[in-house]
Image 1 (tube, one colour):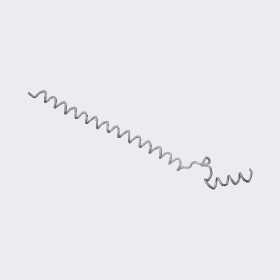
Image 2 (spheres, one colour):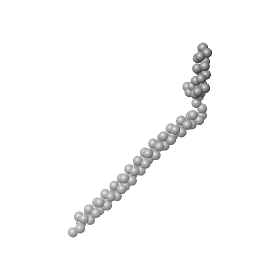
Image 3 (cartoon, helix red, strand yellow):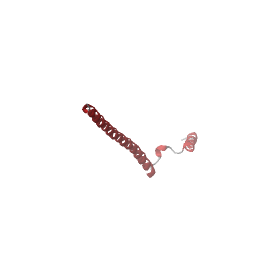
Image 4 (tube, rainbow, N blue to C red):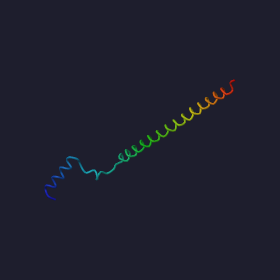
Length: 80
């Protein structure tokens, strides 16, 4: 290795540090990865739960209004 290559290599380390390929994963790296996945899954779960509640409410309201409409139309039919 010539001197210019050594100086170039030293300059690379001083600017950006060691290459990231040699970085060893530590406990917190795994924890952060797990937390990121957990938060994503929690967001998906909350959206699905909210959609399900919306469907329940819409169904209940639709059923209630259909019952009201049915009784009013029945009263009109029975009225002289």
